[in-house]
Figure 1 (tube, helix red, strand yellow):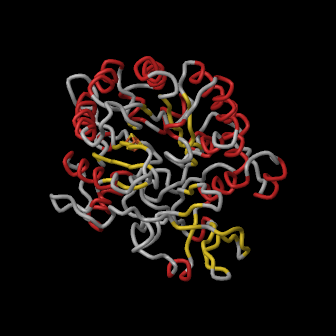
Figure 2 (spheres, protein in one colour):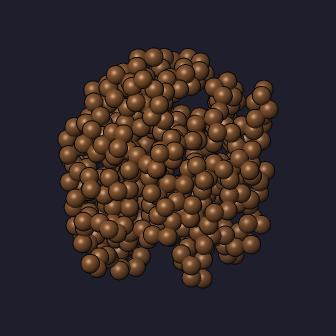
Figure 3 (tube, helix red, strand yellow):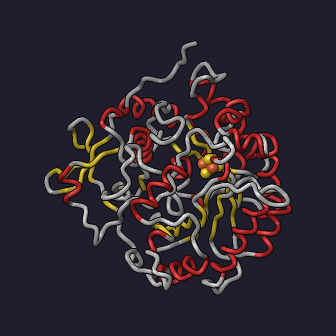
Length: 413
Ligand code: SF4
């Protein structure tokens, strides 16, 4: 069965959706196609001043970890979280034109871009001798903590098909001495050091692999995050502070324990795919251990625990159309995804999308993501759903995260 997808190029999409902000559209397309750097652009990268990549939870699209910038930002401050992609994927190219770092497409200059400024704590070490950027990375206004880089769905055939977390960890261990589990004390010391840079960071974010072990499934994951969060709490005078945990869909009792025992203020439980049939295929571990409907139910429970505007879920958009899929076109997929997002929003749960960037060490490494028009309509649709239901997503917006074109729109609309 053939699948119908939009074939409009950037200029055609821009003409068709004139109210959609161009910077967000450009960012979306860079995420979709990836980017690469010329030798001149790499020569302009100053490791003393700019933030280098390599510490992220997932690998790049060309499988090379280190020696390049973390990413770029656009002239209006929009963050781009795309990674280098191989030439056959037709990435945008960062070059130097007239002395300025410039985004180009097929040799044509698009706009000036910027490397991220490296935080002051990068390059320093904890009292255990661990490099602080391997403990907490910068996004660049959010402190990004990954206490546990191993996902147990990789041990029982349940890993998500777009995910390369454990393969990436093996490479990180070999190339930058990354640890699988980070000690709470190292995290605390790094955050304390980071906070000395006044005004830079606006929130703390934690995530990591799933851990289904425990008396009740995922008790181990719950207990581990409580331990880490309670240590992080010591960095702040207030009992609650801007913070976000991206975890497995924990049950209500587990969420209550986290909420009552730590300073955490918001929670994200990524369902990844907003379609039950495709969820079962793309996320077999999540499907087996929790299930699609139960995942949605737990998101609604989380609103009761953490409150409105403090719970969301992420989708890796584009994986819902990987064959075999029940959808015959991008139109059909979009309608189904937005309908599910609307259902969640009616219960106080916001949905944010990540443009799927296929990575070589994942099962879907050779598959193709969706069209630019699809991603533009999806971002628009998710933002409009939030407006319709009066939901805010401040804890996951353009400053706190920057990985979601739809929540970038919340800055404008
Ligand atoms: S739950 Fe899925 S996406 Fe998350 S780390 Fe495990 S395999 Fe990867």
